[in-house]
Structures are given as structure tokens and as C-alpha cells.
Image (tube, rainbow, N blue to C red):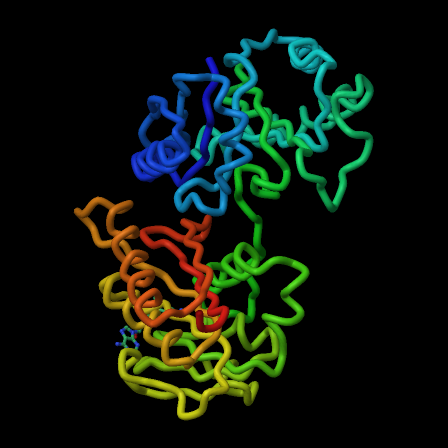
Length: 362
Ligand SMILES: C[S@@+](CC[C@H](N)C(=O)[O-])C[C@H]1O[C@@H](n2cnc3c(N)ncnc32)[C@H](O)[C@@H]1O
């Protein structure tokens, strides 16, 4: 079998499946889905196996909202012996292809997490063996050339592993697509990690100095108690924090935050020097989408990061698509040139994070 395997948040397999089927079909690639509920894994089995590799190159992973990471399978799941597992994997791989890096992975479930000690231990001799046989590059590289491949070994148990590969320039740099971020003790709420991850995901490393830098002005709608504001302040920005609720004293003491106890749907900055807009208000996603688009259209921000909170009981992939379409329609009508990406980030739950960057007028 040849399948594209996609990792997502457990419970979002249906959304991830609907999305890969739709976006593969746009590329005239068709297949059927296999998934197990709450495993955080979707298999897209290709009718024409020969199309898989091209799709892995043509369809940008960053265009998939619900998939955190993906790879294309190399053969079926391997049943490993009790001893000499490394040798068994190395033998299956042969020496025909060369990979730049190895990702030893497991599922984002309790069983998967319980395996992490085993996978961490095994990854050392496995890496050594594959380097020795020339299957794996001798050193990990920072910059990948087009076509560089990553080898994935997804362990379902100590006895079962699925091998596969992805392209380094079109996959997540994090195993299973999960960045491990440290919760900063000084942050007033855990949701701080959502904006930290969003910046990491949406803003390329080489551009952070310019786009996430001190001196920029930012507005945070629905800011209390200040987890998101903390991320802006930490990067040296001046923040207008909009919320009826109280902001953490520690943030107010920095002198970088001005708190407005106002309605986030009505507030607008008085000057056109605001760069970032971030918004974490728990509201109808269409209402939020319209608000975000209108800030971009009016020139009240250059970049926006916001959450679309998914409403229970409604098809979640459709909800996101509808909100994104509303933004596209509004920006299109006003002839705004922009880029927009959406991702169900690791620290997101019943919400999807969206990034819009205004690039000027057409
Ligand atoms: C999920 S919390 C935000 C958490 C915040 N991002 C953090 O990291 O600490 C949502 C906030 O949105 C605020 N909110 C909801 N509707 C609002 C509105 N119309 N105007 C301003 N704030 C609003 C709520 O008071 C609440 O504090």
C-alpha cells in the first residue's frame, strides 16, 4: 500500500481527512481514507500510488489546516522482532535512498506518550546504524535543499513501526509536528503558548527580527489576563490591551501596556501606526473574521493573528472554510493584496489560528 499519513489533534481526524481528500482532489489525486477515532492519525490511501510523491511536493503542508505533520509510506507496517529491531529496520530500508534526518515518532495519545521513553532510547542506535549504512546523512543540516528527504519511523508499539518519508522543505521541523514550548513562569495565563506557537509557525525565522521586534505597536483584543500581551511585551512591543477584565499587574508595570476597558468590536487605534493585531475573543468565528478583515482593509494593522473559536455541533472544517472565505471575499472586494494561512496548532483546542499579512493594494 502507499498512503499519505497525516498527524492531527486526536478528535479532529474527520476534519483532517475531509481536508486532504478535498485538497488532493484539487491536484487530481484521489484516494480513500482510513482512520481510527481519537488516534490523531489519518491515512489517505492513493488509488494511483505513483501520484503520492508528486503530491507531497506540490501540496504545501502549510496549506493544510488540520494536519500537523505528514509523510508518505514506504511499504506496510513492519512487525519487529523482540531483539535486533534496529537491524530489522535497517535491512528493510536497504541503501537505495538517502535521508537528511530521522524522525522517530509515536501517536499523540496516552499509549503513544507511554512509548516515548522507548522511542527515545531506540533512536540513538537506529540513527547510528543508518548513518553507518549511508541511509542517513552524517550530520543534521540547518538549511535543506529542494528535494532533501526526511525519514519517518512511526512506532505504534515496540513491535510495530511504519516507515515513510517527507520532503524537508515541505514538512514540519518538529517530530509529529509538535513544537515543545516552555511555559514562561512570568506569563499570566497558559494561553500565552498559543501566540508563542503562532509566531513560531507563521513567521519565518529570518524575518522575526523585522516583523516581531521592539518598537512595533500592537493591539490585543480580548487581552485579559494577558497571556498574549505577555508575548508582545516580551518582544519589546507597545501594546494596547482591550478587555473589560483586569490585566495582570506585572504587565502593567512594564510601562509597555495601555489597558482599555472597551468593547473589542468597537475599539480602533487613533493613529495609523499599529503593526500587529491579535485577537483571542471567544466569539462567533464569522463575526471575528469580518472584524479582522476590516482592520486590514482600513489599514489599522499590517499583520493579524487571531483564533477562530469553533462552535460545538457544527461541521468544523466547514466552519473554518466559511470564515476564511468571508475574509477572502472582503479583502478581494477592496483589492487588498495579502497572504493568509490557517493552522490548527498544537496548543489550540476547539479553535484554529489564522495569520493574515497585508502586502499592499492591487
Ligand atoms: C480566552 S480569553 C483571552 C485570554 C488572553 N488571550 C490571554 O492570553 O490571557 C477571552 C477574553 O476575551 C474577552 N472578551 C470577550 N468579548 C469581548 C469583547 N467584545 N470585547 C473585549 N473583550 C472581550 C473576555 O473578557 C476574555 O478576557
